[in-house]
Image 1 (cartoon, helix red, strand yellow):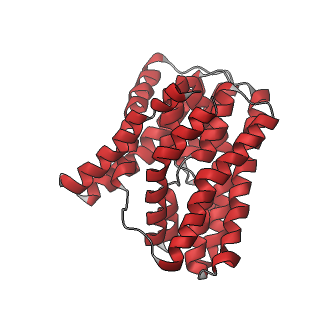
Image 2: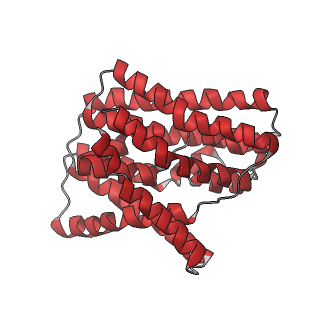
Image 3: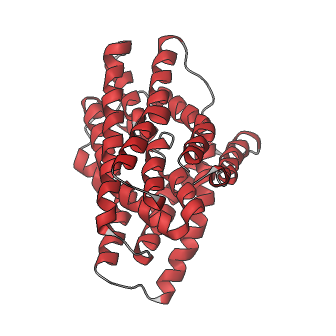
Length: 300
């Protein structure tokens, strides 16, 4: 990866800004965007992951240090996120909601970026590391928010379509199975629609109001952890474990991505602080338009 590779992300960030523009200026109602996000989350992105994983060759040996890098990076985010409570003295409800913003990542942008840089093999590789670290990140998030709601960890994981499609795709691939031509074509069409619609949905969800007072200081901490500290840990770990090429890229991208929009959904569903979480997600997405290309260029 180099500067030219980083510039390949410009159209993807343009799609995010277009989504923001369409929602704010062209009268698309909120229920339209809610429906679109559900379509992407439950149908299009699972189809993209399954399609890529069933077609790409998978090197199990090379995947082990990739997964280890992802787990170590997420663990660093968890540890640094926990420091925010004693540092900033936040109320439990606010802290529990913000805590997940230190390590949860936006899969939509990650799949778009890796697909642009490495094509189907990149998406398959990203699917492997995502399948490993998404359950881990969800466990940590639900654990912290559990005192504010009654949703179980197992239930959350079993309902995550990205995890389910990754497990199914890996099992299909490792079993040596091959999809017939017609299902492959259908999955291919769904995959083609997933990236642009997912990026539009990310843009439409942006919340541009800022935090104030003590919450602004805490927000700055979580943003620095997610966009700077966690990818730095991933870079160091990936280098130490000898990752290169698409495996290095996938490990770094997972760590450097902005906060997942699903962090807001989880905070609301479990009685947390939704508005603060939404502002953090939006700020991280906008800042990642600068930091993510820089990480990619520096990794070249």
